[in-house]
Structure formats: C-alpha cells, structure tokens
Length: 179
Image (tube, helix red, strand yellow):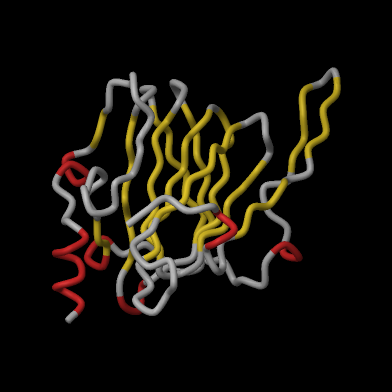
C-alpha cells in the first residue's frame, strides 16, 4: 500500500471556505449546501488537548457507513484517509492533507474510507459533518500504525491515543471479516 496524491482518489474533495477578517475578528462559513450534493444529518466536534493526539483510523460499516466533511475550527491537524472500497483502484492506499484554522480548507471524504488525524497544536478543535448517524456498534477502528498501510505519521511528536485506537484491527483482519 502507498501514499498517493489526493487527486488520485475518486470522490475526495478539498474545499476552500470563505473567510473574512476585520478588526473585530473573523467570519467564515463552515458549510454551504451548494458545495456538495449531500444530505448531512449529524454535526460533531472533537477537541484534542495535546499536540500529537491521534484519532482514528475510523469507519462505519454496513448501513451506517458515512461520508464526512472535515474542518478545523481551531489549531491544526494532519488528516489521513485510507481507501477501503474493495473495487477501487486506490484500495488500501492513503492520502493526507494539513488542515488548520489558517488555510481555510475542508476535506470531503466519501463513503468507504477510514479516517483519522493527528493534532499538530494543543487544544485543536475539529468539526465533522456526517451524512449518517454515528453508531458505536457499527464502528471499525483500523490500527493507526498498521504496517500494510504504512502511514508516515509526523515524527518528533509524543503520540497520545485512546485505548480504542491503540487496539484497532489490522487491514488484513478487516479484509478477512469482509469475506
């Protein structure tokens, strides 16, 4: 498996949010319906207190599979997505992009991808728009450091992970459970 240019992944989109700054502060849109033809049903938010916090790689399965629109409200992340669509030319490969509160980018990840990120600043706040409701019983966590995926996480950071993310399953186990 390999890292690929974002342009190689069918369905992945990078969007630039409008941003207006003044002496008062700033104003930015986090979503506009004309950007994507998608019915989002849930908004979620996460805050990572520590720089180096890894969240993921997460995916919902079955009827609970989700597309996501990821945006950083405060701070900075290196975002990663892994193509788990069995018939895709980029199956098993991953892509990555830096999202932060300065570049005003957001990332659309279609259904069929595992998703994760690492916080690059303390107190980073990430917003997610989801087109299906979160279901803990339908969540799959792929091991963040699976050698078959070989994600190149930023070095020189002390990593912090949840127990769930530390105990993720390998890509091989994920594939064996599909059959």
